[in-house]
Structure formats: structure tokens, C-alpha cells
Length: 155
Image 1 (cartoon, helix red, strand yellow):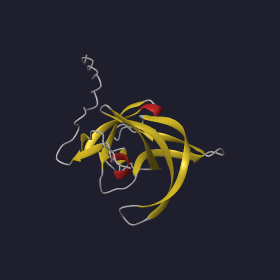
Image 2 (cartoon, rainbow, N blue to C red; image 1 turned 45 degrees about the vertical axis):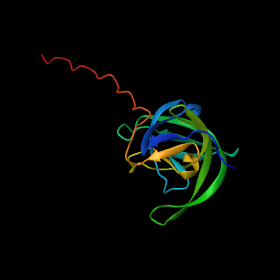
Image 3 (cartoon, rainbow, N blue to C red; image 1 turned 90 degrees about the vertical axis):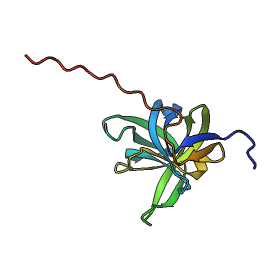
Image 4 (cartoon, one colour; image 1 turned 180 degrees about the vertical axis):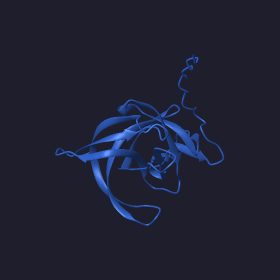
């Protein structure tokens, strides 16, 4: 199948929305060296009906910021890590939005707590709609800064 639509240029890091999970901004790394995509999760539980429940970790600097999600498992995949270790991971599907592009992507669920980005977008998610510029990042906006609280004057 050939894709004739326009490709959207993204940086090697972008903020991505996950509309099905109510997430507006999650930091993602576009990794053309990885085939599959991955989400950082905790408390992963397989349910009896072919679904999983997990806490989607949204922000590395604020681990308390998470969203509890239930999703259907579309398959289980044996995935080899960059360290050469093979693991079986549940794979789910959900919509992502980067800039004006929205598409359905499959994600492996795993703990990425030691990684800088909560999401990894592999080649299968990037192709054919996205073209990655490895010299740039956040071409489609940054996460809005939270309003900072003013310190109370000391008495």
C-alpha cells in the first residue's frame, strides 16, 4: 500500500496527545531504530476478559501524575530490548495526535521509569504520515507550564 498524503515533519522529541485516555501531553521520543512503540506503565494487571488495567505514567518528574486505564489487548508480542533480553508484552491500540495528525497506533506496555520519555514512537507508528528531523524537537509545541504558586511571605 502506497501513501500519497503529505508527510508531517516532527522532531526527535514531541509532546503527543492520547485522546482515548484523556491525556493532552505526554513526552515521546521518535525512534526510527525501533520497530514497535511503547508506553510507560505501572501496576499492569491482566483482566479475565482479554483486557488490561494499568497506570499510564505521564510525567517523569512527577510520578504521582498518572491515569488509570483499561484497554483491550490486541495481541501479545515477544520483544527484544536494546540490551538483547526478550520479553512478552501485551500490545494495545489507541489513538495518538501529533499536531494536526491523528492515527491509531499499537503500543507495548512496559516500565520505562529510567527513560527520559514516557512514550517511544517506533517506525510502525511513524510511517507513513511522519518524517523525523533528528536535529529538531518539539516542532508541534511544548507542554504548557503549570502556573507557579507564589511563596507566602515569611513572618
